Image (cartoon, rainbow, N blue to C red):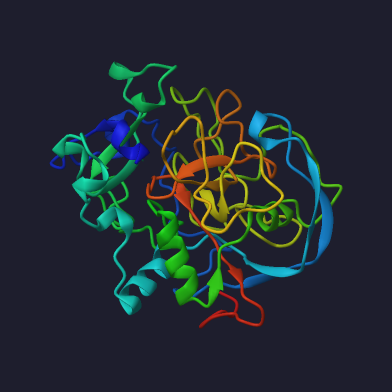
Length: 336
């Protein structure tokens, strides 16, 4: 598990991001925005028409080579799944997330006991240990961090009901989708929706203005020009041409696909993915970038961008959204 290789913070430490050296926001960040849905049921779905488009990009090697893909019509959540929606699922299903479950030492031979506690990866910039060549100096594995405690013990969801749920492993996203009568999008579906189902969508690598990303030099300074130093409530930024919010920026989103540096035409059943940078780790594709993406680092705030993510690792910038099964919308799937 890649989480076990990053800096471990003792459980007793409540790692609140503002205290850890992140740039504070300007003023009070709103708990909701005018377009933010207030329902705790599975969210409103948006129609995505069928089409054919040139998938991929050429900014990073694993985005290409660009290739034509055909996608059938489907429906996708208008927003990322929120804490309120996930809390209802947990309450009704009695579900326990991967980050909250005991860790089996037999799966990680040789790991120290301190690294075998349940928890999640949390972004935490600390200038005293910062090394620009080592991402583990701005990510920490925090025992006790989970969707309920986004920064670890001492943090909670007060005022965050309508922020995207984070610290979610792939199995957690899949469990929610099944409960809602839905599924996770494939990488092709996700990218087609992020392109507003437009084959001629802008291919620019410019930092988007209508998305929650990092302004300034990552990870040292965030000028917070977009109003958010961390994740924003869903739907605080303008929707794309389909009416879907936050496909780009805010938090990374799980897809259903395993990750390989070059995307194959088809995946074998049970393919666990493979990433040379994470040997021996099962990995899936996440898309969209997050509030931590900046022009100088992780310029992945583009539809064609992609990244490998440990299937068992939650992180404070990774969430998800769902798509419909044929003819299934799930309970409370009306507007709002």
